[in-house]
Image 1 (tube, rainbow, N blue to C red):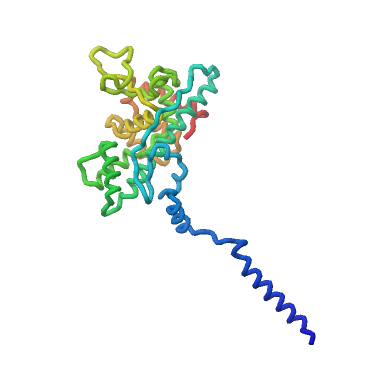
Image 2 (image 1 turned 90 degrees about the vertical axis):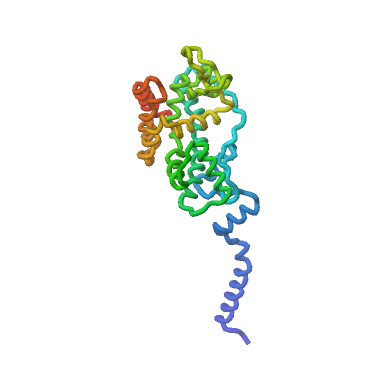
Length: 294
């Protein structure tokens, strides 16, 4: 007996559905959920940052880690690479671009280190108790940023005022001013683009025009990164730059250029020239705006 057409069509549809159900998992494998992805990352030994904005930041070069498995907030610096010979670059535009790029890259890396330190503080700010690993990390930051003798909640509040990035445009123009665009002997021989002093014999270079009775030296560093970290620590913890930190707290939402312009107003203690130094840095900032970046 010949089957009706509708019966044949029904059988064809059923067979098509069976074939589709069999092949579908291979054609469109299920995508892992966020939880599954993180679990798999742990199994494969990959670290997953608690803050997605800092993933792939490149701070692993300094050994700074903050995630579910490890807390290491003290950077480790290796021997620096040769310093570019900026004095041999004759074209002014090329020289500025080369200099600002050289300083800017390291400034951004150290800002990432500081951002991770700040991220840790925010993560424990509202906790009633913290783990041993968290306590050790907190002790490191308290010692490094010189905050002590207060309840932990108050210490975290004070640390958050200090543990924050220094905008790169400020760093770029100030180092250009301090190092003669990277040509000073302190910069070329000791990565000191910042005019930083030290006070132990042999810790750096004896200034040729050091006043009688003075014992300071211009600090010598093994890398630009270690010098940059010390410079930013100096601005972030020295009581002489409290005004700079207060300005940053008020203008934190500004773009990097506006924030730099405002924070320069807190650098009067950096130079004996005081207000004239501030005016000069702000003029440099405005004049070189097209070359600066964050």
